[in-house]
Image 1: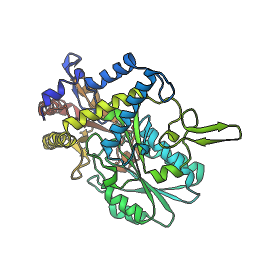
Image 2: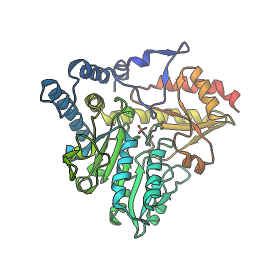
Image 3: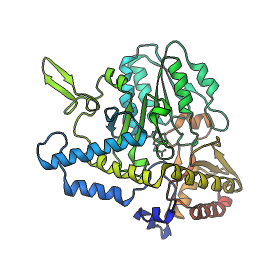
Image 4: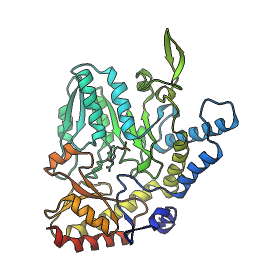
Length: 403
Ligand code: C6P
């Protein structure tokens, strides 16, 4: 991979903060955006801004084509069988809320949903809302000391009342990559469906929803070099067909009358209102950026940075790294000495390093780890070993103040 050629596509990487070169290591929160994505947004606004699927005029047709091309790109990206199974959402959070809200209506009081302790709040709270609405019971899979999922405990949690499993593809805190295929097989053996939170999956792992065997897969564009405000929910056709609509409004209907309303075909049944057609057009460019760079090449490069950074970080006095599971993705959560994560993050910021601090929207995981929060460095395609060197040097410099 030609990193300099990749970096040249991201103008923001040339900026400074507080007079220091920016080293952007907050990619798990949101990645930066290549020029071609921003140009696609410009083209949509300047060239063919019009509402989609509604106008007979040329602009509306062009906007519709650009949006549907985004859907087809997303289908190809995750190898979904059909674009009918590819629903535009606002992001991972909305995708999971859609499943919990709509598929959740097919669950009864006492039915069980399995989650894991490493879930982001967006894969916990929608299920808690469902639990309070329908009396569904939530069960939680614990983790092992290295941050990988306790698969024996997972298998033991199934009961005749289990209906659904919802699990992250990769943890945003620990980096652990969950064995989705194996988990899906287990879920299906028990007659359950499996929903995957792919927010931290698609940026780092080549995803094939058919090979994974998952029933739902949700992800966000902004974490994979795309625009913010748009995401995808893949759902298996036979499930989507029996699920009620998530929201009501324009575009999701077949026919409306006060005597009764019918629903549009898939995927539009789940896309009420004017969609983010500009975001959809720009998502195509993010996907093509990843495909042209090579998703496996991106993953290998990030893995190299992880393998390079981890032992160097471990040499820093007082360093504790959370999440050491084999095959983890390029996320390093850590604490140094007795320093508060926020103080470490603030000092790093002053030196030009953008990292995330806090509970990372995973408070139950923090409780399981017995901490309040961590500092988190996360890598993307454009990060370099030189940036890792600079980061380690900064940590070495700060370490004495942080004990
Ligand atoms: N995690 C992080 O800094 P949205 O906000 O809908 O695009 O994605 C939510 C989400 C869901 N699942 C996982 C595993 C995630 O990591 C995230 C977003 C960011 O870790 C922001 S909290």
